[in-house]
Length: 412
Ligand SMILES: *Cc1c(COP(=O)(O)O)cnc(C)c1O
Image (cartoon, rainbow, N blue to C red; front, side, top):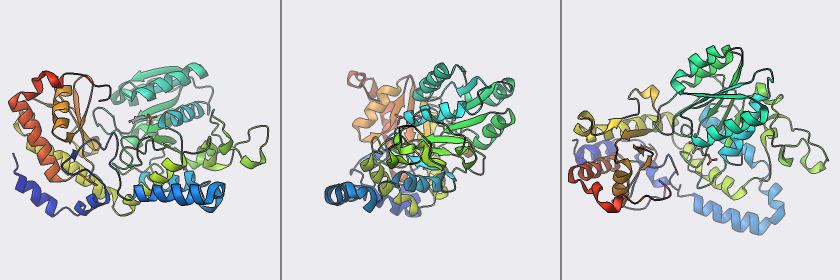
């Protein structure tokens, strides 16, 4: 196993090392769960306090104009656009990912009503599956779920009927990175559009939505973007689709003239028509502050470091990987994985619980996957070394077999 000094040397030459100071992480904690809830950017509490006292408390209703709350969903959307390769005017922020999925899947399916098949990844995150099924029931579509690896074949098989292909960029369980450009091109060749879920990719993997010809995308902001619990989601609609985009949730913020208070809905021009109701201003502005971190680091560097941290973790586990104690479920090739590693072990729950007791925070997904997220912005090589050393000790000592680790908690 590499030594702690080896890890220290890697940290000493890590150009992103100082970025950790931009986060408020508790001392002594190794945080490998930024893929579920990103760490707190240190500037956010003061910014939120100012928003609450000065903007809300001081300006009251005038804040919508004086502090430009009204255009915040689009302004923050353009900032996210820079991280996903989207030119301005194609991203807006608001609601939850689940709500955005519903609206976007339905609007995408309504582009061509002659096509009645929605293809989705069988391994997609549950909310994505549930909402695809719901949209299918509402619009009378046949929803077919197949493993993402077989999607390209399925698209050509259903070429005369498929209207929408709904896929994650990175699999939430295995960390596998799918071919955004390739699957989008396959969908287009069949006459369909693709709706990408970027929850586990945005802020971790550089994306180029415009260049890849992506039609639609949604994503979370509380994972790698660090927007905080319940931070609003974002939606991307390529310029070429905006005029025909008819979302089912027609709220007044998406109206062409919201303050004309007209009795009937007329969609706004451009990306504004994806807006629904009054945004969660506090969460939105916390996210705005969190995004400042990305102005100070190049996402390509964050990505490269994340890959190096994950590789270092596997090096440190060494024989436990080689002898099959842990099966590495995540593909090893850099172009086929996101920012997390998934290791299979039948005692995944007990092991993660034992790790958390030692202040090494990862998580698990049933039935048997340990998940470790390696955020290049705030995880160090020494963190990774410690996580591996604790995991090795937990395995070697058998402590995870202790009854206290077997009691299931609600949230894993
Ligand atoms: C985290 C995640 C979600 C979460 O959706 P919410 O509406 O924010 O709860 C949805 N889809 C994927 C793929 C995710 O990883």
